[in-house]
Amino acid sequence: MWRSHMVIGASSWLGLQALAGPLTGDPLGWRERACGALIAAGGALVCDMDTPDSRLANALGPLTRLAARGIARAFGGHRQGTHSLLFCATVGALVAVVIAQQHVVQLGAGVALSVGELAALAIADVATALTVALLLPGVRGVTAAAVTLALIAVAASLQPRAAIVSIALTIGCSSHLLADLITPAGIAPAWPLSKRRVSVALIRRSGDWRESVLVLLTAAVTVAIAWSTR
Image (tube, rainbow, N blue to C red; front, top):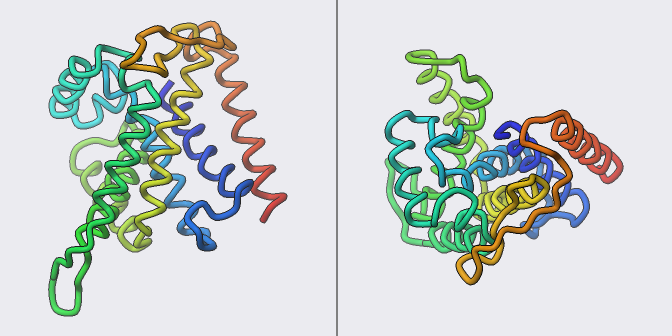
């Protein structure tokens, strides 16, 4: 389920940071780690934009549902192209290319950012806003707009480095594949070379008690690893 994907995405980022050291080459402060976790949590939902029934596809109403229908047609339906290793690698590569652009944009007196920095900030803003908006489904209308603007302001104040955005997004997408792998429906990791689905069915269906246990264990192990390597 989408909440499970978000928890696993954030846990994957935090766990890898703790085990492998800074994935971006420099030590990360708690704010950057938190920003990366939010981006990974949002990135963990990207793969399910191949169906208009997903939570992310309904996040912005008709706009995202229309996009989901187009993505479903392009990638062969649910749990096909967007649930492949190629898709995750492509998402990460495209984001890396965009945020690597060095052309400077003058935003105002004394404020200048590169195209890449603007793109990284925009992705972080959207991921942060969507992450919390999805976790607060009862928020609507003016309140939702106010919450989103506040979240964007918070994300902007963090000024995430480009590498954090690219790596966290890729980790989030990849965590989605691992999570769906343990469901009976499985994934098609070798698409488009093969549409054959692979499954290691540790749970009987999405949303059952086994899923809840596995997600809680994942979060608990991540906290334990992060605490022991702090």
